[in-house]
Length: 172
Image 1 (cartoon, one colour):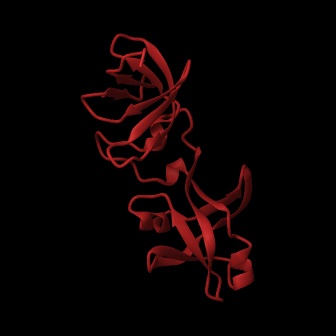
Image 2 (cartoon, rainbow, N blue to C red):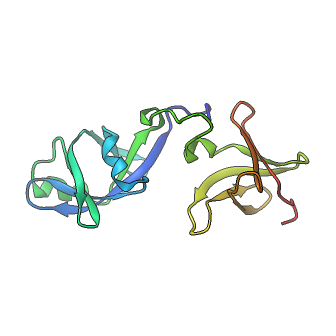
Image 3 (tube, rainbow, N blue to C red):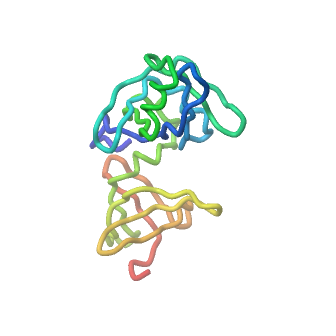
């Protein structure tokens, strides 16, 4: 794990709308599977960099093709409507520890990316999901998009040294 920010905030989704009249909200989840977001409670709701409040998930479920949740302190449609558009964040420490040889994407953010020859390409800013494979977004002298393919492009992730070692041509 990237120990430089163990209490960092991780955005898991967004309040997307209201559901019914009793305070339920529609939730857009960025977790996989999408209903995992309901397991992380309490949620800190934020607008940009500003905390709006902390809400315990009272209940939640898959509904049609989306998710709905009922939060403590949100007991009617007007209260739910006031939450629409807010980001759902948790502290990194709320996530369960990853299994051996696994890690969370958020733990890669900020790591230095070096080629096998020791050339520094930059730092991981975030990752993207694509249909073919995940992609490391690396900012250095320029932005690079590196496919996250073990043993072909990604050679090693070393959290102790704060680096990802890659097989990548620095000119590309």
